[in-house]
Image (cartoon, rainbow, N blue to C red; front, side):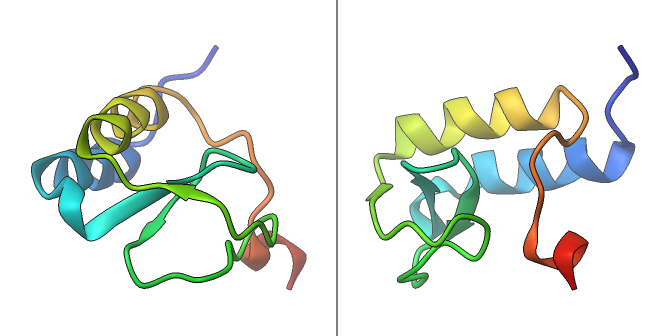
Length: 75
């Protein structure tokens, strides 16, 4: 397994330091901004905004390579 990119770890640290600005998509586990209504990756509309969930998911995502397909990948 490859190490995650430094940018990914930096983004995760930024999110973990301000979890109230983010929420976790319950469809695909992506982290999105608090104002997001529909996940740009899976189009789900269910989110978990608990700060402890956001921090936990940021740590997970920041410690591994990207595995999900994003809207940018499809464009």
